[in-house]
Image 1: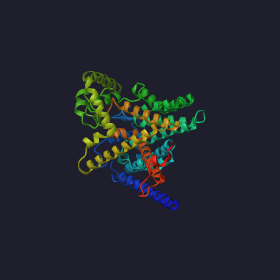
Image 2: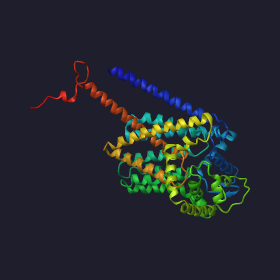
Image 3: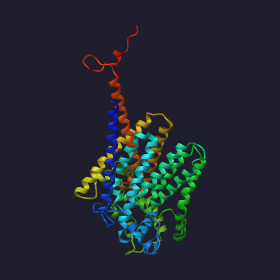
Image 4: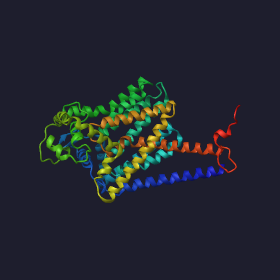
Length: 451
């Protein structure tokens, strides 16, 4: 019996190694099929051109600007990285960037697996790694020139740091981890503006343990963000984190999926759309960017008053697109085989959500402090992301870097819980006395009666 278990264990180990190798090969193939092209043939569109325009302007010494005018409508870190690859690889910079994103994707899988092992036990490590490795959204986005892969990596660093702080317990020993956690949150905010809504997650989860750590997280995050905000004060005349909140709020109502379906409505309402503004060759003149942002926010307030109760079903729809991937199921945005692949990815996501639900309720059934912390962490994280995005556009692509990795970790716990329950059932049946016909004797028949 023991040798049989060893053989099975060895088989599973080799199976896991083969799965990891195949997953890496798949990511490399998907990433390098586009070659030096900015957009993959199956992309269906995105914001790549805007990041590339900013990166080219940086490379040419024109600063972080569109048409010679400083901008804060996009976060700065990703265009800076693209500009670095342009300088290092020349015309082959897209291939270099995608290789970088492959490495980041693998690092994200590793960190998420480590987090899962700490929260749920070592039994979930390999499963989590494989689930993150084969996430359809992550595989797809590795080939894209976009902020998602870098954001997912930085948020995995942030989440892993929070879990590590919990392991250290109270005291000042975790000062370095706290600084690292705050720095990761700040850098994520410089890659994707909405990422900053997760900073309160760190503060909520560590505040009961050590106020000193909370202070360090805040200071480290501010240290990352302050040069950007100070730059905006110097060149735009305002202490601004972003100048895109106004237009994004309007799009959250008139183009709620953020996929260009409502461009006409946004243009009619505001008089401009960001796709026309974010380029060097403009046919129209625009007021200062801070003024555009203020007027867009004022227009959003008017829009909310006009729509009133109509916003309730709209927001429910947005949540379904975000959490269930129904935007891709109902409107993939591409045709033929690419559309089928996207829908299969949605089905895989639904399966992952079911397993994640099992994993979460398995935590509720256990009363240890570790599981209590994990339960709170997932609730706070998912709640903040949902509320943070609710006024803005919501879709599968926006969700992917924020929550998909943690959902995969919960799904691994769900699989482990199902396996453990099945093993306990098999073991109890195997240990039960048998009748003459070979069937298990009922529990009542095994206990002697007491008179």
